[in-house]
Length: 245
View 1 (spheres, rainbow, N blue to C red):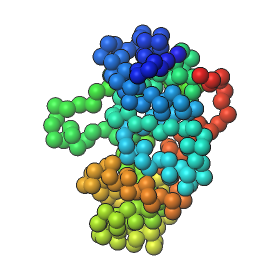
View 2: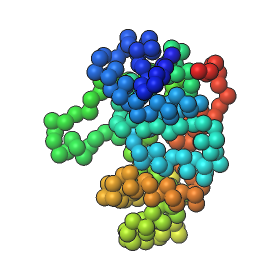
View 3: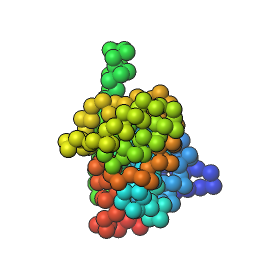
View 4: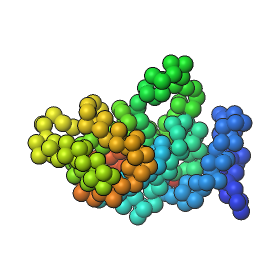
């Protein structure tokens, strides 16, 4: 089991990790655990996400749409500040943290960065090979988190966010859409200019800042991205294994 001393969480106590991670990754996990040990160790279930944007938005969005208070069920949303989920997901299982872990990640590639420098390529090494089990399940979006938020049931929250951040043209554009939503406008992963507008606004303001403001307005939402809904539904299922710590 992963154990906690006075100031540190020790990775060496997790037998399986020492077999699958090299020294560099092991040290990375040690530093990560130092910063997140409370959320990981004292939660009953965990949602691992890429960054603070998801951490800001997902809890209030789940509460608004699914009427589920993640805090009440001791479900922690924990960012890893990157896309290298595999070493972190490996902490959950028979020889580690015996609790469910839902990995929520984007399905996009770093197109913008590669366009700027063709020598950059996505690193599809062992860090991206998440080993799923009864404890770990991956829920992957087909695009970026921000693009996936362009849904009919989230338009009001987005309009209010654009207004607060000083983007009246975007607010007007989404208000016009809200007044006449096409029947085929849904979370298809191909949201076109509307999804791109959300992403552009997030990049312009900083994804963390955009998400922080959006989190204040999602209480009006009636819809959420399906991959996030699926992750929460899986976490809320009765356990099929003994997940006691």
